[in-house]
Length: 237
Length: 233
Image: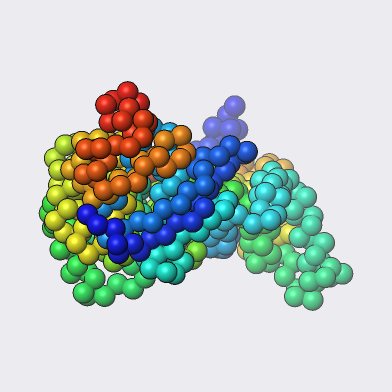
């Protein structure tokens, strides 16, 4: 018990005095999360909006596959990306294995289906309401997709935040493709796993506190936005 | 009103869904201007008929021509019973339906909003408007696209009386003279106030088509007489 309380106090010291190693790990975590969520949102939100508002032959098959991909096991994704980017893999010549770039790629594979499917669900209900209006005024497809995104902005913010939460807390895939290399690919979750196994609880707890605080702030923000959105006339959730 | 200048021709128009005929073979020659009221009880097939005219539904058979050519969707604007309002300001709702926003169109949008009594609310979130104000906005939004034909599906069904009065007054005084209007209603008094001609629809069939005066003074069919006397709702 004493060890734990000492480690806790020590970890608070690391946070308060902005320990350089701690700061480096946190910043890398945020950088990887930022790019992974940015790419997933740029691709996933328009794709989800397009799928929700368009009917084509294999639409249901595409949607079913995407929904299935929401539950992809991170370790399997990590292994898959590792095989592609390893020296003997098809993209091994790029030399990206054990770099932050490949960690972002793995994160995008995990987050993109989540962003896309949540966007699909939100815009599908809006599409039911707008569809006849858009058709009667012959609104162009691109303009209507943009309108769906703009008019769902509050709900879509929560989708992005959900993506951030998923990305920042992910460990299985990025530890395989990133290798948890000190000063290069070590992020909060992989560092916690390593430091705990080494018995270095100060740093592990410090990172754990930051991770927990990030999750709480994100969830708080989601609830705040949801409350704000529910006060908006015409809200449907 | 005379019908010599017939401009809208409907040939053998029918619509079925899942084996059920919702509109039976319909042949009509309609006036190219003024207000045509599609009158009938709930579930008679008025909205189906209007949506076929709008192009939102594709007929199972038949055709609709306007001034001898196929009815292009560009010439039409549709206002539904439930106002569809985008989650943005009143003015942005107006401008959304335009292909290109010019200064003239922006000025026109403001003028139309003023006519609809919404000039002081142009920067307000459109979702905060009352039901009647929303429907007035929808009507103004339809007009700004400069349609040759305006199709209105019970636009005053769920709104307050002052909005109904404003819309009716606007249609009669400002729109009727230079645009063809189709107006769906089951309100006989409203039909009396607005109609130049009446198309009476019952159980998916057009039972009567005549000038409003003839229809109300001398209905030809038993169904129309029963409807006017309130025996069919």
